[in-house]
Image 1 (cartoon, helix red, strand yellow):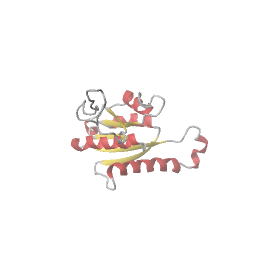
Image 2 (spheres, helix red, strand yellow; image 1 turned 120 degrees about the vertical axis):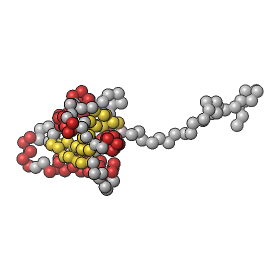
Image 3 (spheres, rainbow, N blue to C red; image 1 turned 45 degrees about the vertical axis):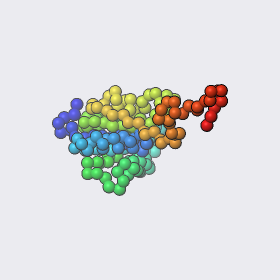
Image 4 (cartoon, helix red, strand yellow; image 1 turned 180 degrees about the vertical axis):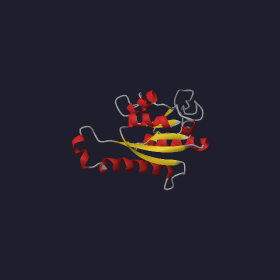
Length: 172
């Protein structure tokens, strides 16, 4: 449970996906009327099996995560970051890192990317773990649907039905 000193912080997991960009946008929408701060966290770690080469440098992995974070922040806020928004680059895998961070937050916001065989039906592994184990409320945000060019629908159900003549022939 968040203490009184921690109530004004919303932590957002940002990985550069459309869902995480929307999660950042929604976190700010919630934070403004509440007077809360938003921390956009980008988590990074070495890939499995990288251990032997870890001493060679972390710049590539950390740089990629930092770049994704900055692009997401720019997509939501443009060139001017609001005063209540802060970014944080954190070494660690997203699940345990964000769950641990939830101890310091009044809310955790994550995106749902929907990858995998049942992506449209199930939450992703990170969002599922956060919902199950976070120490504060969790908001899971999906990416906005792309705009579709739809044919205009008739205002009345019968408006789109062609008229027929008494003989059964259609008229225009």
